[in-house]
Length: 375
Image (tube, rainbow, N blue to C red; front, side, top):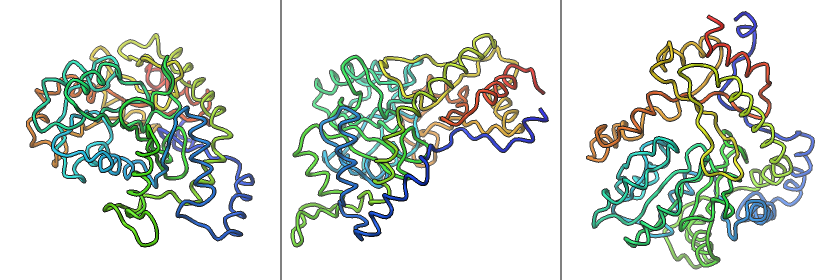
């Protein structure tokens, strides 16, 4: 206990940053060129490098993942209602409201915590135009079943893949599924560019439309073809991304080791359930969620506070549900009775700290607190 109190706070995540001295030459190049944004050389290099690394055909960089979600909906001209999950960060549903689209919430699967395909069809109405699932914690959705439903009803599929950088299933990158997939490169993510995001596009025509939309709709100096937005990634972010790619595999290995440590240490703690990897051939260990079951001696919130009192800033991702916030809870689909699994999970989940620099001794201290070995 005393050791923990003397330590600086341990947050749920900490951004990986490469050696500063390696970033200086990139900054010098920017200073020399005076090119700061509008599709500069680092921007174009990063788009190509990410396509190669992720195993995707086309990728459009953005200033952040939320603007990328908003633009993805614009790119596919989505209207009416979109079926989505209540168990996510609010940006998922906010992007719908910003486009004048009504989110329709569907319950989650109790194992994957992703949108439950078995519940989707009952939520489809004549106004439904798309499905927006989330690869929660980086675990892949049941993409085959979701696509079959979408094909049967003529719906588009846009994946919020903010957690899913580098995740692969047996058929390759999970980002290649759906009509579009959207990534976040926020500081909290596995791969960060300080701030940033991207849309994965299936073909060059779609990428061209997205590129127009993220730059005010400009085609050339005097031609505007759409009511676009300013969503461009600047050269500083792109330069960092290029450098980050040199270290991403190393960072993922560190995350995997921490994941293994948690699982080994927590497997004998009654009332604590670690989520199993579901469907990944290559996982990214973006988060480490646990579920605090009724047979654990403390409530979820009591354990959360115990950790916080000891300087461990775990997070209740995702609590409250999106559907509980004022701008959503009036909708029929937001009723708790419609979302029993999501509600239950939201009341049990805690995401424990995980990031490449997290030491094994800190993991041991966190587990000791959870196991009740420290007051």
